[in-house]
Image (cartoon, rainbow, N blue to C red; front, side):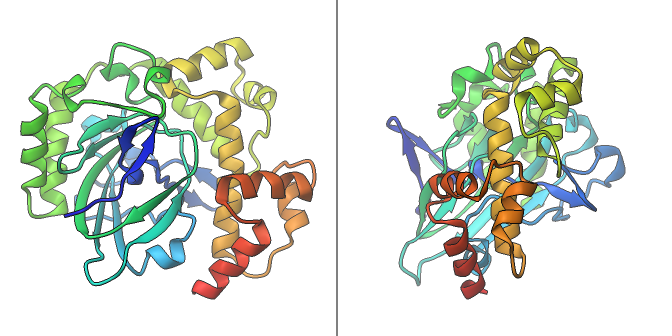
Length: 310
């Protein structure tokens, strides 16, 4: 099997770990439903992808399923995700992937690792066939498992045994030898429960701050996020560096642009000037520059490409 790989400073990273997903409830956007409100069923697919630049094309070729964590892991984990693809009868394809402020634990044959936040948008090539299990931690959720700030692993990886209380090769083999999503999730979940620390209140605070930044009509500046969270800016900056790995400004900017991608790829006719204003950009030109830099095409060209793909 051949999996897609991206490289940053020579470090191989599995690109699915930068895919972001979050569930929309009415006008509010939250990272996931409260664990107390969702029944744990390993066969439950709880979300649709939000982070692929070309979801219309990817949905025809790639299976992406997400599953809620068990209650014992809900303080740390957003969800488990499974990606499966078979491109053996097709030429390799390239997808552009947008980053989210989450660390991931990825079980991928020969490349299993703990991934820190990846800050840029990346193009990834998909070829061959494969299946991967990932664990998306809540913002701040990985920090209680390790002994250093998350900022140290931004754009890079750590070995599995830095987190799990077992040999990395053994852990990978045990998970990937399962023949179902539920089986892989059960084995990986047991390993995480065995390694789980005491929940950290500051990790929860970091997750709440990121959720506030992700909300529709949420803060569009660090100062506004501080006001919403009733936190001092220096404290918020230190909290994000330690528990999330990236700055509050980075998180706010990425969520604004990800929301733009989502609306342009899933909506009908669109008023770009109104969209720019709704997302807090100074004007349409400011929005277009930032969008093009991240996505690789202008908002109008991107909207046209997604309409044509459906």
